[in-house]
Image 1 (cartoon, one colour):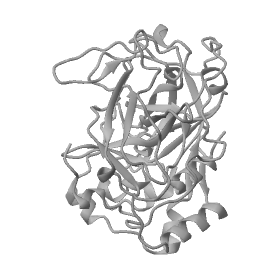
Image 2 (cartoon, helix red, strand yellow):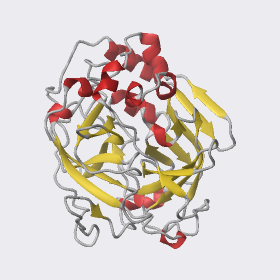
Image 3 (cartoon, helix red, strand yellow):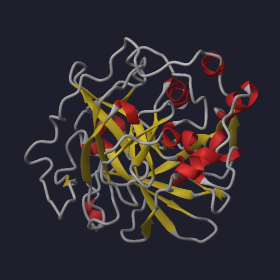
Length: 368
């Protein structure tokens, strides 16, 4: 992939400041492989195969990125990191950014320009050792380099799932991908939870971990309903009629009613001061593959394509892949560490929102 333009990489928010924290976030944020016990009889949701159409990823163009007005005002920046949510019983939730997050945002907003060349290194990564023969058999279609995950019952695939949501406006279901990052906490993209087209929340979120086929029997652990869903306030308030105005805030959290992660495990997540070059892994449910099947793609992410708020890569994705975690295998820590969330397409590459320090703090405030 060629080096992307400065306009695309330039952030719509804090385009010069870097978020600086230690290489690994404090717990929460540490991976857990689960206890390996089955949850098939514990599911709380009703999964109906075939009712959902994959949600298309928004398209991020260079023109949109250049039109997005940067937020330089402290009050507006802090407000953008408020929590906006919806509970399963229809109650609206609105919580201001906590004091730690406010201080972090203001400090970084006023920080001098910094770059990718800090002393802290990125993940000391190798290929993911979990993607071995028998766990992810390779199926190639032309130049398609995605691999089908055939055994979704093993970690880390047990922690990755299919996410459904219903539009109250149209009555239709859409699907995305999502990842357990805690016992009850699921990470995905905000546009999988809230529709700018509808101007409203989606509803009836259902998480199906390890789904591996087109029937209800192919959900090896069952399906799980939600207690509440959350997005960054900036994803709603800063929308200017085009996606490029809100891409830095395209993160979403779903809190499940049940503790799923203790059995199935969850992935770790962290901010690195300097991601540098690393191997990205994306696992999810692309809609151009057989219904309900899980696929994995890997590609190299180069330092010149990493911005403050998001980074870009040429891993293959498709509608339905929105919300997939982008993770690196950190060989030093022996962990799969989420560094971003797959959210958008652009003419030259796909895009992930970066888990910088402010996003980590926001996620931690919702961790359960």
